[in-house]
Image 1: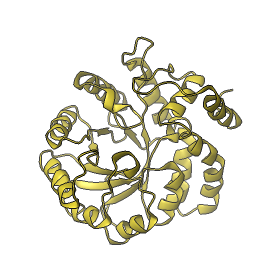
Image 2: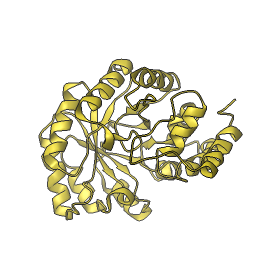
Image 3: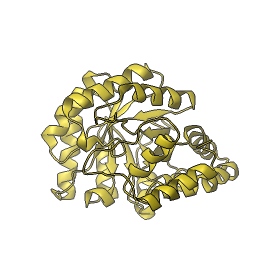
Image 4: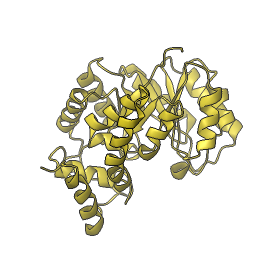
Length: 296
């Protein structure tokens, strides 16, 4: 089997803010060090969980720069650079490349509703403008459109398009991609609750929300599954499943940031249009975190 550029567990890193709403770069560095010490295999800043839509160019540079500096080459850094303007994606991807990231995560264009051929041309154009690897990101629940298996497989033939983060929940589609992809193309789960199953089907790992809270256990689960030890991996899957599901009782990243704040890792600050969780939902996710021993 050909070597995969990206494999294992990546954390879809939250973006910590201070009480005045500015970036908390000290907390960013502390989180990254914790993840590295916990065995994390990829760090993925400036994605959906990182509230990337609210970051300006300068803040994006400060965030990604802090992550790259802290990681210091130990594991790949994959920066989220996707939006629904191809020229803007190229600009941000080139900016990220100049800062030394190992790849970019590019969500499919939302709102514009491109055709499958439009999606192909979008990603082909972005990939052609940079030298580093591109990870496709298919999340129809956020974007309103799906990257079909056929389009994914066409894109997988482009040399620096090396992986897809698949969050469609469509297992027939995901299996078709796994069955027909090039040997060096990775299929990563974009949904924590599906990660075990996707690895069992032949996928290569996950870019995870829950890994923010339980980095050691989530990386252990995926490593066990990749090694074929599905019995032990399944135990962790069911242990962590309430947290995986609880992280989406309100819009991500509200629950995960509430848990991290209760753990003392960050301050519980969001940027509009996101607002704090309802009291009932916050208590629900904190009860789940407490049952896992995260708040002791």
